[in-house]
Length: 402
Image (tube, rainbow, N blue to C red; front, side, top):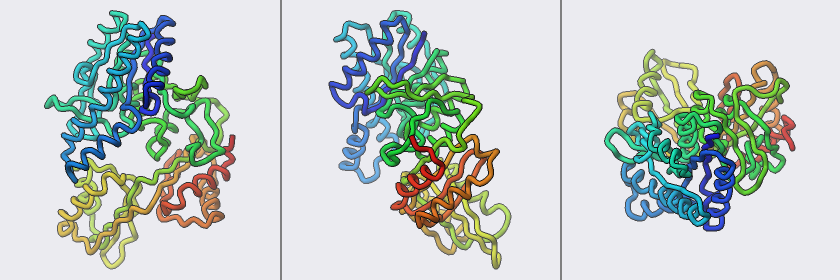
């Protein structure tokens, strides 16, 4: 079999863990498999590099940040190649340029365009274990780009798709995909399987087990995805197209406290205003989530929406530039909010999910600021301080306990 394995930063955080992972890779290789391994930066390396940048500049350019952050993964793959060599196994480390990981030009949040797998294929034919830097690529200017936090998952799935791998295994510090973050909800239950659609919603809504774009790619190219722990031998969770016929109503609860709400006040209530605002944000690469528009009165309306906290500085700059053109009378920013969501393929055929979720918030005395729904998810915006309490209350209300 051709197997792609990805190991997260906590899995290779120190020398002991590097050799632990090396043993796992060695076992897979000695079973006669071809093995490609994608690695993240060690432990808190990325955070440390960001801190170093801030010591030098309060607002470093995104291009130079990508140049800096990419060094973490190069360190990981080189050290792992050395560890495998110590175990007597043939291994070679490759960076994004050597692998031909071509991306868009959006520094710090690039998207993969294509992979040229020829070099990987040649190294596999030479019986090498191939170690590839995760999280990064090259744009059309031959500059290094990064794929956003968690992007190593996307690297692994993309390589698996390009090589038509038999399996893609994502190793992390938890034993699989849970009904909620087990560090927040102690009664969370590990799922044996989950659909691509449900996993994509959970990943997009704050569950940090998988990068959302990795799930998009896995679904598009039908890559068999398994999430398991690098620190134990548990079976993990399989992410696939179709799961058991009899499903629970709700698959999981997700929370995200790294968001901000933007409220644009006093917009002229005429056609085209919303298009102008959101088209401007889109051109600057700003992803908008929950949107709420007030009922127009006296020829005016308000529009509120949420963005990632990391994008707020860019949004403030855009709003300041276009405030007069949009005719805003005021603007309000709130960073003290969190988004809590329930996800489940069973929701579409069952009434009362929203009612049960809102009842749980009422019983917990938690105020809801905004609501967003789709066929398989409901998201609410609440005060940041209430996120953990809300996740536990909703998890209990839907009886997702272990």
